[in-house]
Image 1: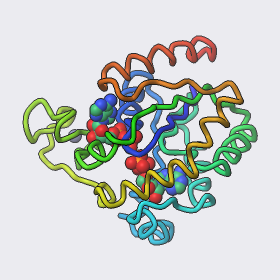
Image 2: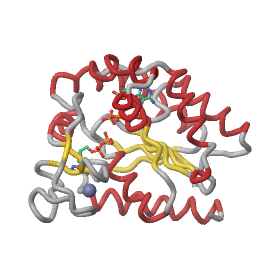
Image 3: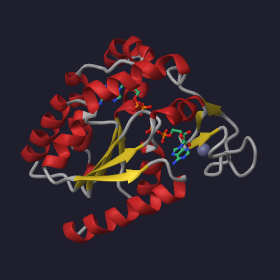
Length: 222
Ligand code: ADP
Ligand code: ADP
Ligand code: ZN
């Protein structure tokens, strides 16, 4: 199963991807996570990307296309993967199609998580993750079962992203509408798009996505 999750920042792509990973055992390829790893490691790519990311703008197409192409060649992607936050421009979408074609692969489908703009700032401002295992939480919407302790790994250390502040939300939303939202029409025209209501509770969104994925799994045979 080769899946793309599409939606504005804060829509719930990462949250839903973590659940698909657990159920289907295929990796989540988040270009945001990969870029943040490059920034903390201080690699050349990280150094080029840092200021752009902090401001809420998009990193250049060639950088992200390069990292995704390399990542897809790794062994754990053989049975499929979930692309979270990529492609984000039409150039990246065309590159993805060509990249997969070259490797003899095709997309199973694209799921758009649709969310009203007015809740996105609250989702982004309340977001944090476990510093040890990366599990995602929210100050109001998704708290750990025991206050201050990660459900999954028991760690008591959490972190917030530097770009998750109300100032960057507007820039990030503009980037989404200008550069990424055209992908909705692009994948609709290819017959690959399904839309879920991301305004529902997290579990309800997961159930809607699982119903769609069961169709892919059947059609794809894996
Ligand atoms: P994205 O990866 O699309 O940027 P996330 O999955 O990180 O978004 O979600 C943003 C924040 O909103 C997280 O803190 C998450 O816990 C919370 N969240 C995700 N889905 C929902 C939902 N359906 N309802 C309420 N809060 C949600
Ligand atoms: P969110 O889902 O909250 O927008 P991400 O973690 O997907 O956050 O992305 C964080 C930042 O990383 C983006 O604002 C952008 O600067 C950069 N980025 C991530 N993926 C891409 C991409 N496919 N193309 C360009 N920039 C990207
Ligand atoms: Zn954890």
